[in-house]
Image 1 (cartoon, rainbow, N blue to C red):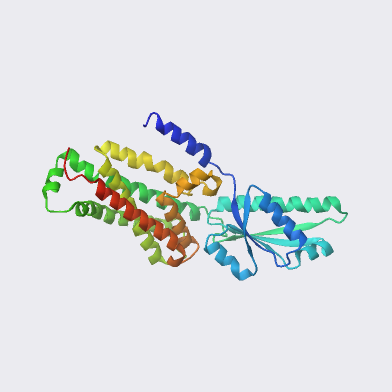
Image 2: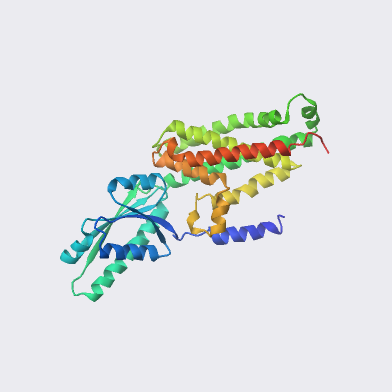
Length: 346
């Protein structure tokens, strides 16, 4: 499988996932005047391969909920009487409000949106003697200073916790098999589910120490603030740690050697976490099958929740979807591990 299957998986993932292009970025539009000029620009934005206009909002109070609910990454705000101002004075303004939790992506799609606006401006100028000027004003939300650590700290946190936790527990049960002590566990009065949970407990404590260390470095060394509830961040992280340990334990119940367990939990998880979690490359840029595949990567949902709480300053109610999915994954993984646990040695 390593010699034949791994190259195929790598070329597919690297070929389709490694893309810095901006595609299918969700855009919401606030156009109070709803005139011909603003609608022409909206149509040009929607016709572009870079953007999808997913919502029309009607008042400024709706801008924050759009970002909070992750419905859009860019909001275009046309000034009042946009078309009339452009026609009478030759000048009009459009505000581009971007979700800058990923500063590289925000820079890219605001640049593309500005270019589309400029192209419409040139069309108007080419057919009229009056030089028109449409001024895009860019505002970066959540990360106005465009600090890169705001993006990679949640991603690295999700990757490190998953890989370290999974590798720790992946050798927990298989080591008992290799050392010949599994017989003692099997003849003990403990039920299989208790053996599985007991293998998770010490590593759960160690993982909590790792999480605390990473958070201290992130806040005091990298200067990444915790804008939202710290308790909510800890609660989601503990759930993610438990899920990661359960994933490693599943690997441990399905393998017969520590080398195989380490190989699966290390190499087998690293590529999906790096490429399909959204920590480096935007998921919406990928083909639809890879977007579906990314939904089963736990790090995707954890990174999304951490960005919402840590960077955007949202509460636990804003990440209930992510929490529900991570909880469901945890129950499924523990259930499969329990079913796969063999009470008799071969």
